[in-house]
Length: 163
Image (tube, rainbow, N blue to C red; front, side, top):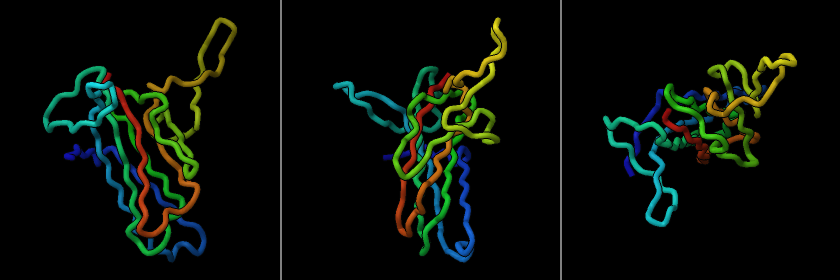
């Protein structure tokens, strides 16, 4: 299946601890985007986005980030980051989850992170803190809780809606 690549929308962060500085992981990240559709039975489908085709308001785009460790040693503290492109809004609950990683979100382009970002809102009784609208998220990241083994790969996904 042909995929439209949005490599510019991906940032990866790989850290190492102590003696792991001598390790030889070789993590490669591949980002794909597809339009979310539905077949005749109403089942969700992922369809290629034709090059040059303008996206329509309300259309949902599904992103997959595949992290593959082609190296000979485990990759420690892998933390891929997916950006929410301008003119799009994160679809609440769409980030893939698994026991092997923690999902966090940012409202400020990745300067600060939280599992459940909050914002301060002025009310008649003063300033209160409330959960941020997921449509205001600017980035999503997955923090691996265990190393990515040599020759292994993992897929992270999330969806956005065209504004």
